[in-house]
Image (cartoon, rainbow, N blue to C red; front, side, top):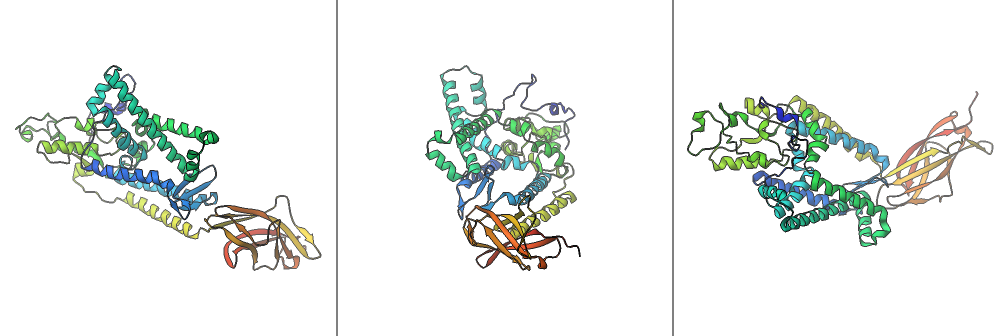
Length: 474
């Protein structure tokens, strides 16, 4: 997209002043069509984010990421470390989807879906507008001395920020340790759960630091997605863009004067009111072109449309558009690059669906006892000892578990475990077993056996083991 000849603005970021210090951003309170839509999306996502760890499906928490206990629930389905391949596949799908979405629509995810932006713009900034006022009042309040008014407003704002940060930290913990355990800790004596209390305090401090001080710096400095954007965007990507051809005209911008024929004078529709700059939450001038700081929040679109409407000029001076649309009047179309991403995404999604369909409710692992070979029992019986582990991924106990050999004559004997035992819901059962086979039924010193796992008369899993026997010298 065409940019000004002087691109010195790219040498620094909008939140750093000439001395290298923090340039605080005081965005004007946004309003308009896109902002109203963002509020609907944001508050819907906030409700989901807060409610998800407290929703149960078949006794399973809707979303759970308990790393310490290695328990994970995705949309109410329990996953275990044995399902790590599904997690890897899901991450690959997520990365490809983000790449496809960015190539097509820029950084819209950041402005509309990212939790950082939603909490910052729809919760903390709205509280700030309520207590401190709009842009000019906030600037004035920051510059004035610490009188009773400033102390009162600062204390109230910081207390509310701290309280909300504490709530966010609790919700975050609910995702990590489980909502049931969190509620138990909350209703109990905090001193009995210091191992959870200290992380809660740390999370609260981190969230408070981010939303009360670091703020938009997360999107500009800390988030790698902004850097990724510059690699993925091209001339056909739809982004929040300033129509410089219409806005600059032949003789550039000019302040608005009533009853002046701007077209005859060769001036563009941009009246240099700076409202698009004042409303930007990251403090950039969208008229300079696409910048990594832009999160596509559309606040500048709403503000510019309002100005255009007030001076009887067409809306859309700032709008969702691609460089080719502004330069060549080309409409959006799916490119070969996008088709490639779509093909890869479709293949990966199909593979994940197949893996989910083939995923068993019970995971069986049977391994040879370390250091053991085989043992003779009687004249012809060869015995091998194995350890087994059964993981129950369901919310119901699985009873009457027994093992059988498939297509192999022999006997499985349990050690210190009942012949028919059970695996508790979302738990595991471990033990030791012997496999005894007549050596005349063996085919050499190494034999691959298939073990079937039954619950009653229903086969629920199969696994393979290597059975060792005496070497034949015939």
